[in-house]
Length: 190
Image 1: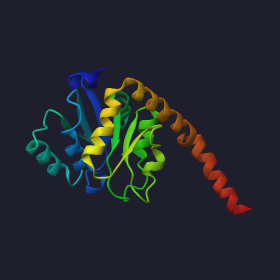
Image 2: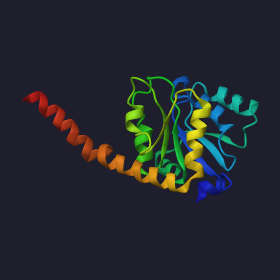
Image 3: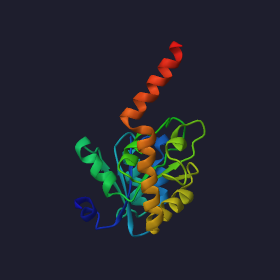
Image 4: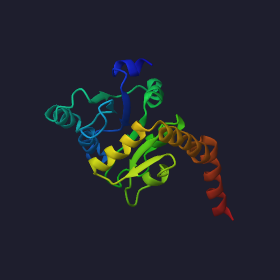
């Protein structure tokens, strides 16, 4: 795999989103200190906090472990999910209503580590122990611990990968979502 080679054949923890405070990338950078040394953290996207993240990565001595790769073209995006052992959604506030990127990860069978944001759909999308793990928001150690379980145990990773794909098929395919919207719409017509 071209991406694996680019990152020295290390395991990939992938994350993606606008670089704004509620996405929790600062926490993910903190967590990188605790994540296994045979892995790298790859964060796609950009935004108002990109420069702050670059400075933080440098000040923490994580330039060989955390990579900010900027915007990813749509036609390349799936290859990042497929190359990754874990997808991480470290959001810290309910401004993150749902996390569509979780669905993208599930469609490729990539296990997820997300956060338990009260009042948000994020922990519903990623079912704890089935499609990935849910950790406490803004808790770098908890986040790293959950990521490390997936990175270190092939059987857990495989089980969560299968669960992620099953959850995607059960709830999030275009056909399934259209059926659900139709059902809700028709319930109002009765």
